[in-house]
Amino acid sequence: MTAEWIVPVILSGGSGTRLWPRSRVELPKPFLPLLGDDTLFEATLARCADERHFAAPMIVTGARHLPHVEAQAPAEAELIIEPEGKNTAPAIALAAQRLPGDAVMLVCPSDHHIADEGAFLDAARAAARLAREGWLVAFGIEPDGPETGFGYIRRGEAIPGGFRIASFVEKPDLATAERFLDEGGYSWNSGLFAFRADRYLQELARHRPAMADKVRLAVIEGHGDGRKFFPEMHAFSQIEAESVDYAVMEETDRAAMVPAAMGWSDIGNWDALFDARARDASGNCALGPAELVDCRNVMVDSDGPRVSVIGLENVVVVVHDGEVLVTTREGAQQVGKLTGATSQ
Image (cartoon, rainbow, N blue to C red):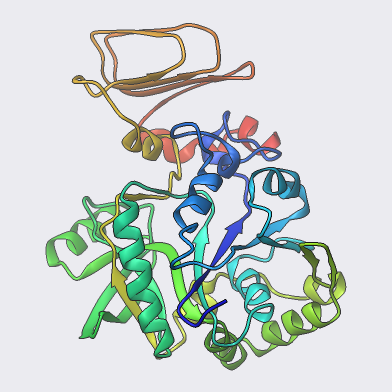
């Protein structure tokens, strides 16, 4: 590992219930080919595979998803198997404990879509430069609408290569999101971060000392098996689950942001996936056998049965493994609340 390399730390967990019925607990959205032939997980790894800039990836996952990770990850990847899910702050700390202190970590969710990989690389390199100077860096996405499903970053003063973060803002209501758009100076919080491993652990110890101690103990008492590493279960189980945003990024006085215009989407629901897919002149898209007549902005995703839609707008129809979902695009945020989504 050279001093200029960036270590991709891929976080792979969750169930992706808002993409039910395609995404299930046992086979969630990172491991599905939702946009092209590659899965979102494979696409994430591919973005970080340029050996001129990136070291071998480190993947943090749970035992439930380990078979999918092993099947799709490159042989050189190190796998850290969490004893249980504790949100992103402890997961990142596990990786940081396994790396040299001066390693720059590029923390990437495994289930996001990035259309412009060149812009992604530019942003990653800019973030790495700031990280080497001791900043903890978030990737900020320029909003293209009043989105209520994302957290926001309020931009502070300019620094070489980016901006200080003035504050993080919770997911807003529509009126607040519209105000953010009108005022400018706000970005979506993408969930991608960059920092040196030692700086992250220092800030975690400062703001969440109990978590930092338990993660360190779990790593010290953990064990390896080939490329897999298993943190000690008892110590890790005592950690209080918390996101990196709350535990570190909102607490540190060295939070920075790099703006990233890279065609980013978290593919958080069927409406987001609709936006990321290619559409015809009427705004429709169909995957699988479908006939759309006098429709606008309709998406069909079927694993076999033919779907026919007439005269509808802004609707999503999904048929998968014997289950059928019909929702408006606006209602797509609620799919994760369905009984079928939470029980499978």
